Image (tube, rainbow, N blue to C red; front, side, top):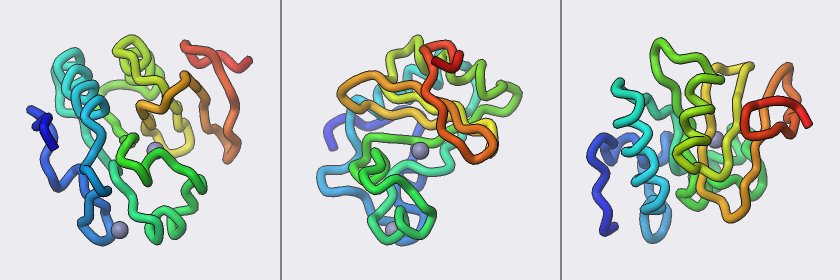
Length: 135
Ligand SMILES: [Zn+2]
Ligand SMILES: [Zn+2]
């Protein structure tokens, strides 16, 4: 890994079940953007999940081709910021995948190829625009 994040430790990047990293490590753009987010927010950005190995992804019911499997995604929250406030900042920074998870109070960010915004509420995924309005 050539980009060493300023604010995120290896513990926060590895799979919660086995402590592994994906082949090639966590995507550099993801880590750079997470650092930018941390600087903009000015508060600790808590990571609940970054890399997920395939068995762990299956165990938590992750999407079959979840960006977490490839080290391209992170689930985050910041004390004192709402899901919408954090998601708006993440969108401004340029994360291309942003999920507002209202059920579990976190924001999923990723660096997939094409932009995709959605929110998760009452167990459903609903496609939305960059500001979280259903479309
Ligand atoms: Zn694992
Ligand atoms: Zn996620």
